[in-house]
Length: 510
Image (cartoon, rainbow, N blue to C red; front, side, top):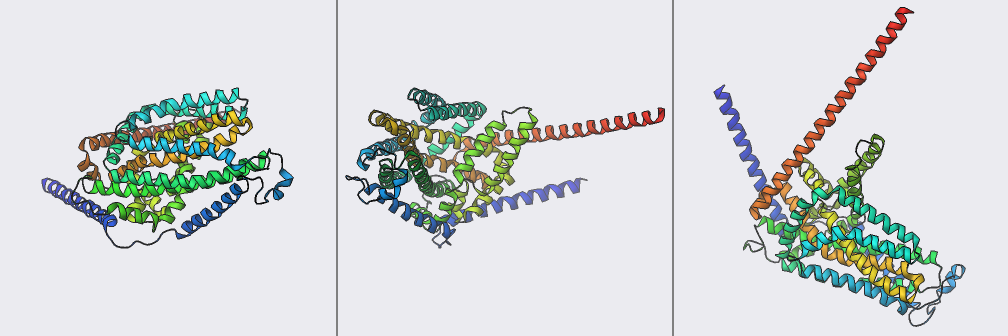
């Protein structure tokens, strides 16, 4: 028995040593994957071509629509195509363009302020966004009702209610979430070159918004009725959302590559950090991996938001089996989509240069195989950062909406909605810097926990303790469900036996 025990212990020791060697070799390979000069294969080229063609077509149409009302009514004679829906009071592009310029300026100012205060007051800003967003939505709802905009009043009131319910459902998760965000902020604030790249992206996005707002101002000033103008604004807003998402996720890939290198080399001041690593990460993001970024940007944000809402509702349903069954169906459907569309794919794209679907699948399988998926599900950092983005958009929309109210009351909702979207895009470009650091931390922790341990031992211990707690919680829930299933099965079996006994007794006496 002693010999067998020594043999088994020695085999376990050799297995653990082999596993450690495999982890180190894999980590070394990951570091070389991003730092090497070897060329990468182009991925998802079709979507990069679609995005560029879409950008050219949309930009051309927006310039035409803006020029048609610039300094002269119906300059390009487009109104003859809209005679059947001519209901609007005619205006000029320059009448409305300053309103959108204000929104872009406010959004840019908020984004730059966020980046400037990164590392000192960023955590306070995120805490304020979580707690004040509900109040801000409620105040806007009251103002909409006061201005007789009943539809928007109901919409903002519903948003305030959903925001309040969501915060209540995840209130116990916020301490760990803010801890992760604090570490991500610490990581990014030590990379000033990344902050400069974010400033550059915001300037380029502001120039794109100048063209976009020029065309939208021409639509608002056009002779079409409200229905036609709203349809055009919705179409071009979807285009702006895609462009903004591509900008954000391109920056996401660049920052993720840099954060991974920092963690791999033990810190931003490490002498072993490859030279021109930022240039290399940027080149990969805008060339070989750009198609994957364009593809993922179409779906990731919507699926992620839907997942947060369903998780919040699911945790507060209780024992309503009918409602729980419906929500579980939606939950498993969204979880299936998350397997192929998640934000952690961008870290895999940055490090390995994979296609988007493969990156998303590999990241999710990595989380599930290591148990880190329970930690990711518990963390609400993405939702907190989204609240900060929405807050920035609402501030920009409020500024433009108030100005529009004093000039053209019938255009308030149209201008304020588009201004809010502009503000969200600009604020999101600043906030994605922190989000990319969060995703990189989780991917590194799942692939090689020693990377986090070498960077911050205390944070590693906190993550490991929380992971242990979440795995225990999941095991307890699984045992509870299994016990309940067995109890229900036994109860059903007993009921069938009693029914058979009663039937046999009735037949016997009959």
